[in-house]
Length: 330
Image (tube, rainbow, N blue to C red; front, side, top):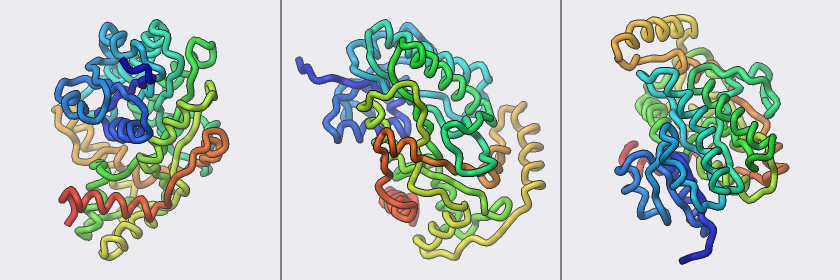
């Protein structure tokens, strides 16, 4: 039996989780992937050394997942899903964090890298923000991710577990279907700004984020939080223009006032949610256009030696190439 250490990745079936798995395997690291569903396990078997089916909401399933691992990358969470009660978000994103930490302690796991989100800071009034910027989560996902981060920090602070918290900025990269709609709308000339497009956005390439997770695991830093972002933050207008240029399409110019769009989103949510229908527009989607998300990543660079590999133009080029390769963009 191999004596090489093996590392657990929770949430390995997700976009970030799969990229982290691929990054670790590319670096020669043995990986155990934790997923909730058998179908997810089948999809990962060819990528990792071991797959375990476990659920943060089922504490009895966790000991087998954490047994014998040299460290845990804790990525698993419930993202933004309509129709779920707030209690479910708390149970997985907050209490699920506590459960995985307790199971890890019982198994003698030495280190956990916990994935939070830049959303714990929400809109940045005076960008760029550092890790000390006030917390002001704006929805149930961000609230429960903050609760999970605070639980993790309690374990780190009192010495029950070693590790750090990473707060990724806005994540994108090859294969990310969450940004596909924006690229398609720009390609078809249908993209519009809510507001003037001057809002600052700070993206991080998922491949750089994966590298940051490994750097955090390999460090001996404890009980710190790190914002992990790309080389620069720029306006949404500049991002849309760069995408349009690379697609050979006209730059988007249509602008819609913020007030009416926010009222429409609020009214749509009121009507649709009681009926169990996913609203066609959400206030948080409007927030994409009006909230500043710009960060100072110098702490991660200084302490973790984190360094994004390329600029925004290069990241956009890779995303477009992947979409075209997959037949998602003409």
